[in-house]
Length: 116
Image (cartoon, rainbow, N blue to C red; front, side, top):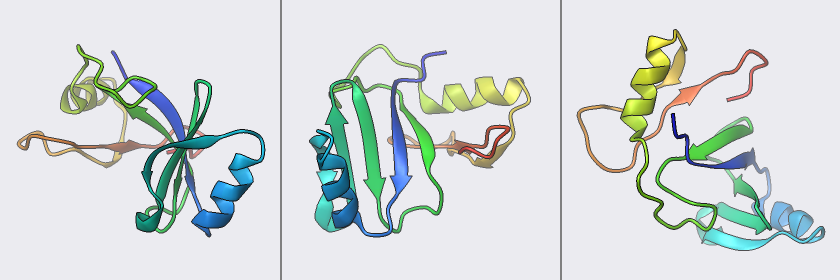
């Protein structure tokens, strides 16, 4: 199972304050649009996404098809295939990708400690 590049997605109350905070130890802009309340930052291979108003809790994020530089990384396992593999192991989903569509999709699972 190839989950793709990993990052931590943080629910920010004030995205500008969060960006300023994470710039202090050395994180810099990577991708995203601050005016749309989404900003992904990097420090070496460490990646954090800051999102204001998009979700309530922090989450772990995996991006199939991307490398750490947000560039295409073929081959990769399609998110719907990953979802099916996880379903077969008994994982429960909070939200599911629609397998009848094409293009970007996502699903949400919750770990035993409540991490999304």
